[in-house]
Image (cartoon, rainbow, N blue to C red):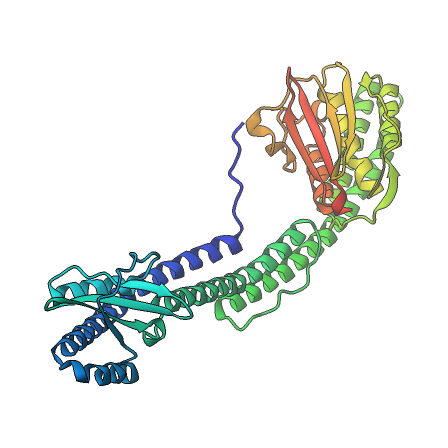
Amino acid sequence: MHHAKTPRSLFRSTATTVALALFLLQFIVIAATVNYVVLPMAKRSADDLSALLVLSAQTWVELPPETRKDFELELIRKHQFMLFEDLPPLPPRDGFFPYLSLLDSALSARTGATVSIKVTELETTWFWAEIPTGDKLIRIGFPKERLDINPPMMLLLALIAMIALTLLTALILARRITEPLSQLSLAAKRIGAGELPESLPETDIKELSGLALSFNQMAFQVRELLASRTVMLAGISHDLRTPLARMRLAIEMLPDETDPKQIARLQQDIDYMNRLIGEFLALSRDMQKETPEQIDITGLLQELADDLKDHGAKVEWQPQGHVLRSAGPISLRRILSNLLGNAQRYGTGEPITISLETNETATVIRVLDKGPGIPQSELENVFRPFYRLESSRNHATGGSGLGLAIARQLSDANGWNIELLPRSGGGTEARLTLPHHSQ
């Protein structure tokens, strides 16, 4: 059996699409900002700083020894530079410092030698450049605070803020679109179940407001059509049953020499017409959800099984104790009577099996027969009014064709689920599910 894919919710699909689009836009904006703004500015800054470091080291070397101390104080005061010579080498730096890598490249380009910034961490973090000048190796350094920038942290904070705004925007947009549609879907389901929903609220969005207005007008027209149809059918029923009663009376007054078989056939046709009118009215009536009552489903099935046995049917039914559920009593009895009647009519005299199962979520009633079964393509069609699998319209073989249509409408009105399934080994399984949350 083919299983359809589970549809995704419109809210989730819309929010995901909007979020992905905004995330892609953010990635492009951040990549462009880094490549065309942040990286060129960092390179320019590293180049300027490397020029100042190399110039300071060269100037110190070229000054007379007696003036170097004053120059060192001037470097500390104006540029926060500290300068030393002939010190033990420092270990290579650890960690990820993108800006120091740019500074390494700038210093190496200016000095013609490989220069790698070293890092020391005592009370504060200092960065040191060992610059070869003449025959000396000058170590000149500056504190981390002198840079006064942290591009990675800036980008991280910007990314977090953009992600939060993106998700919030996606959720707001998706909710603005899907909430009116959810209300529309719920109202349409209520109309399909025979209920009369309240009018949908009209929003300040033109398209959604127009949709709500059109739906409200349609719902009003549906209510008017249903009411008019019920009144019209009630009138037709009254008009038809009056001549039927006269025909029944005329049959009773026929001469005694009239063929008894012909009289019986006429009476049978009148009874069938009267029953057909009643079933058609039941199908067309505006069915509301019946007020639930506590029902012993086991007892109801036992009663219906005994009725079948009294009419000569073979029934396999083993009650497993009382099952009390809240349900519409008239609707439930009528649905089960129809399913059992169909099983008896089409079961070719084989035993009918009734099963009752209950769990935390639902109560499931199954009626199984061993008849010829229903083709897979017809399992839904048989719930249509007046649809019959027999080519004949003889009511003695197939009934009126309204029973399953009425059962489906009663089931929908009460929030139940009725379905027909092919039975393994031949025959048909009629399954009625009563979800506990709908009661």
